[in-house]
Length: 192
Image 1 (spheres, helix red, strand yellow):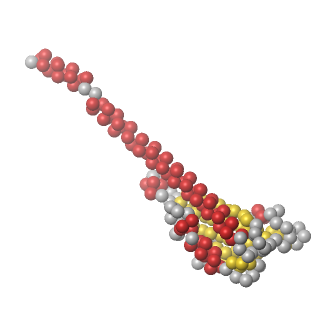
Image 2 (cartoon, rainbow, N blue to C red; image 1 turned 90 degrees about the horizontal axis):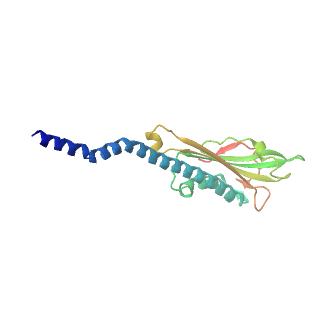
Image 3 (cartoon, helix red, strand yellow; image 1 turned 60 degrees about the vertical axis):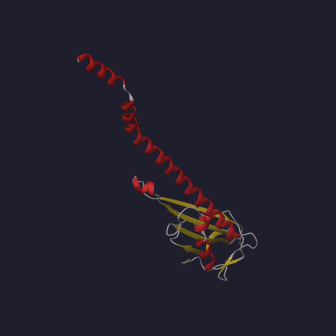
């Protein structure tokens, strides 16, 4: 009888199937956390790339026009849901479009007009210094995108704010007119 129990004990000691399951149970949470972190980082990179692409596309589109309306800029803002797919832009995107002119012999930059959808994206008008000559202008587009994902909500990472800006020179005329005027004193007009 003792021999029989001894052979069962040897057999139990040489059986390794349970060890692999226990090792997997210890390693699996770390692996899952690592994979989810890689996904989250790729989603964040994608959001940054989409915001960068969108701000440059909007600057290019607006600089091609000779005349705009506030409603037209609202339409460009509304098109963000198609231009930034698959990101959720409703309630998460701010668009700020300005025309910066250069006045006087020193070509000092000054805001000619500004249209905002959402909340304004602050900038220093002196960033445009040297981008144009007297009686010319440049278009400045600023974008703020608040990125949120399920993974960042789960792990307490919170939202990530992405701010991008782009400048473009008007293609056809020296100044792009908005609502019939090339200069409305630089006051902020809200699109929506």
